[in-house]
Amino acid sequence: MEIITERKEKVIYRDGDKVVKMFSKKYPKSDILNEALNQSRVEETGLPIPQLTSVNIIDGKWAIVMDYVEGKTLQQLMDEDSENIDKYMDRFIDIQMLIHSKKCPLLSKIKDKMNRKITATNGLIDATIRYELHTRLDGMPKHNKLCHGDFNPSNIIIDENDNFYILDWSHATQGNASADAARTYLCFALKDKAMADRYLNMYCKKSDTAKQYIQQWLPIVAASQLVKRIPGEEDFLLSWVDVVDWQ
Image (tube, rainbow, N blue to C red; front, side):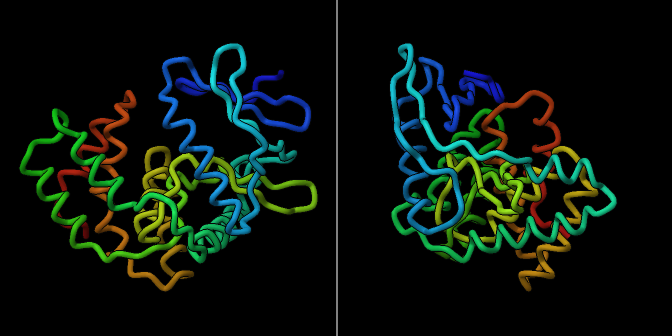
C-alpha cells in the first residue's frame, strides 16, 4: 500500500482503487466505528462522497476502507491558480451550501458536541468564560442542517471530469449551518487571516447570512478547537475565546 498522508494516530493509504484509513492501536474503537457510521449516513443523503466499503482489522489495527477518488484537492487547485482564487472560493461555498441543504437526522447534534468540548476546556479556560460560552451556545438557534465539521478546500477532490467529491466526515453533525461556517472560517484563519475574511464575505453574500451571526459562533468553535491542544495554536485560539462580542 502507498502512503497518501500521515496524521496523528492514523495513516491513510492507497490500495489500488481503495483508500485505507488505518488507526493506531490506542485510538478509541468507538470513535472509529462512529466515523464509519457518520460516513454511511451521509452517503444516504446522496452527496458525492467516497463510498464506504468495509471496516476491518488489518495487522491488529482498525481500518476504514472506502473508494479511492483520482484527482486534485481544491486546495491544490487554489495554490496552483491563485489568480483565480475567487472562482475556486465561489465553488467551495456552493458545495458547502449544498451540504447545508441536506438533512441527516440520525447524526449527533452540534450543540451537544460543542457543549462537551467547552466542558473539556477545564484547565485551559477559566470557569467564568466556560459559563459564558455555554450560555451563548444555549441561546443560539436550533437547526437540523447537515454540518461537515471540518470543511476546508483540502477535503474536496476534483476529478478529471470536473466532478467533486467531499472527504472526511468524521466530524459530521446536524445543527446550525452558521456554526459550520464559523468552523470553516477558523480553518482558514489558522493559516491565512486574509483568506478567512475573503471566505466569510463571500459566504455571507451568497447565503444571505449576516456576518455578525456567524461571528457569534467564533468563540464557541475556537474553544472546541482548543481541546485538541495543537502546538502553536493555543494563544491564537485563547484570544478568540476571550472575546465576548465580535465586531
